[in-house]
Image: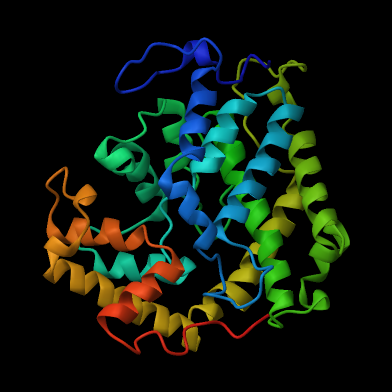
Length: 341
């Protein structure tokens, strides 16, 4: 393993110390706790970009999470970093996502007095909400990777944004972008929002025209550019970081901005997005006004009605939110399903 890899023996540990497992490292145990959590199971019914699509092949939060894990593990294995650690943080990074994708997160951020960010909610889930309020007691390194995976619009690879992160956490951030960029392109083409030749010419020249070609080009570039992270080449005393070559970085940023302009932002303005906002606004307001109807597992820490409502509603799947809203306010979810197959 690389001298720059995060080692279990050097871990900052758990908030509540535990006896070590005779079979698994602490990072493996963290991975398994995430896999067996209720929040992880709910990812299968949370959509990514297109709200409640009728087709079977659109990306869900669960399939996105698995793709992030696969891409991240490929990179760290090539760089001799800690595969168990990056797998755990990758599987846990999106546990805090709301129903209805990015629209849901924006709505919850507007409704909650303290704001809402899905990465912070992911951390809240593993620290406080899972196991009926006990949390999962994960290691510090996994929790850092979970809360640090989000990226601002623009060049998220510029200096300073990863200075205090483990190399594995840096890989998780980058793998998240590689995964969602490519599968969101596929979903947008499937939905008729984009055509293959709509993608920027620079991206098609450097990355190819197929999903597999684009992912392979990006991952190979990351490994080649970050090779000093293996410790096989002398890089002086400066700690290396995960990076992309300048041409790949420019193309990735251009492709990311293209997706914001053509897919992500316009998708937040359509009829389904507006209906999704209405459903979440109704549910949040209802449970703030009726806190006793929030399940008891959200009462354990004696949170405010606003926080209880935010935790409960944010944890819902798309389908559960629709069913719950329809039960309380029949007809509210009309026209919510995306008519793409």
